[in-house]
Length: 390
Image (cartoon, rainbow, N blue to C red; front, side, top):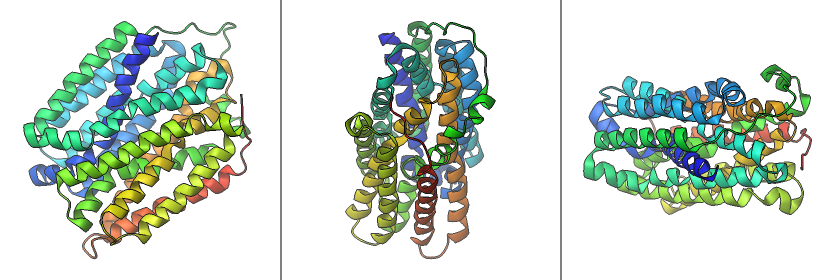
């Protein structure tokens, strides 16, 4: 099981990489194939949309055929195949299509590990284990920063994508041979996602799940690159360093959030407090626009750190899910979390397109305000949730 979890962690490194590397490639894709920021917002949104759309079938597959075949087959077909399509892209549409396939390939890997945690480990440790997997996998977020910028400078972006296709194939093979499927629960109980949606206790959690990852995921996944390029004139190397700083903050935030529910004896108030501070951080990002470049980079890093509540929100909802629906429960929660980022990327891309052409900072300030507003609304609804501790 440990070898299998290591392979799933490597797969999640790839997943984190693929959702974040467009920020570094923004300028070279613009030069080579004419991809504008709103084109890349669409491509990024396609990754999150396909990833989210796969969560419900992935949940069914985890409960019925197990994590080994679910994760390995999808990563091989979608991850390796999508990276190959990206390497051959000649138009922005090809990039969007490739990101759609890659999202499908990445969709099962984190949930496969969460499924194993839920089946094989004590319930009280789920939030900590989930945060550890998220934090270790976030190394991909770091690799998708300055190291990727360096690889693109040395080898070109097409060769870099071919290398990622090979890495995806190797990791998918490792999952197939190393992961062991947990035993299925006794009793043969049946159920569906509809049973979960009939649980009112989850209704106040879903809205915050929908918006909590969007500010950090969307900024790190795309907008930090065009913002620092258009407003501050940073090149690919400078953007790579900035994304590295934000990525390190996101990793740190994930590890810090993990044990806080046990430290404070509450999940609800840890989650609410962190996301309320996230609203303030987004507003601060608007306030420091035009200041020396280190200030917005620092605030973006703070947004990334505070955005690490994602696994704790999943743990909050997972505590109410019956054992025979664990696979579908965690994937349903992930559906809202990742789907929220995809929809927010589509909306932010439209917002950028409608305001582009005037003051360089104006589209980005509107995007930051949009993220702050939606996160605040999610926090308000979340106040009506019931706390959960195992």
